[in-house]
Image (cartoon, rainbow, N blue to C red; front, side, top):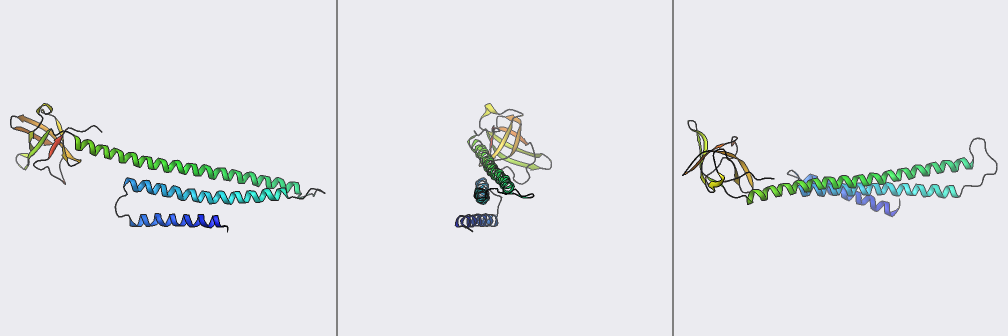
Amino acid sequence: MDTLKILLGATVALLLGALGVSLYNQKAPAQSADSVEKAELMRQIEELRLEQDRLQIEKQRLALQQAAAQAPPVVVPAPSSTPAADVAAMQDQIAQLQADKEKAERDAATADREAAFVGGREIENHDKEARRARLISQALVIARVKEWVESPDAGTFATVDIVMPENVQPGTILCLRRKTGILGRLKIGDVNIEGAIANPVSAFTETRPQAGDELILDPTF
């Protein structure tokens, strides 16, 4: 086995080992950057594997070409197998090897496109999430929760202080913001000089609104 093939095999083994260690140490759902890195690693492994295949095919093709060039001249045709027939068979094998080489190159190009597609999708999703968080954090405060009430008799609602009255009227739906996330939505009911009453659009199960929580208009993503 030649030195180049040994080096390629060792490189593939190292990349596979790195991928295995990465998957073993993963304790949480993969983030977008990790997914891109893994896709690139898989692409490199596939490129090295295809490069090994191409080297082997090229080696066989050169050997067959050399054998065809050194074939002895035809003196007496043999009834079953002649040097000319052997040369034709070798040429067929060379053509097949060339076709295999072209297929390997097409497979490599396909692997490149797939890796680029996966990486592009991950980056796109990451950009959308970052844009969403930025729009939420930069949205103007329309109102603030003054008190959250959960009563068997009165029901579940929030009393709110209105910061921008021009944007609040009965029926307005405001988003409950906490840091860069939206916990839920409240629908404005009665509005008076002291503030307003807002009812939850859907139930708050895990996290309840608190006094001081900010209410914003639903950002357009």
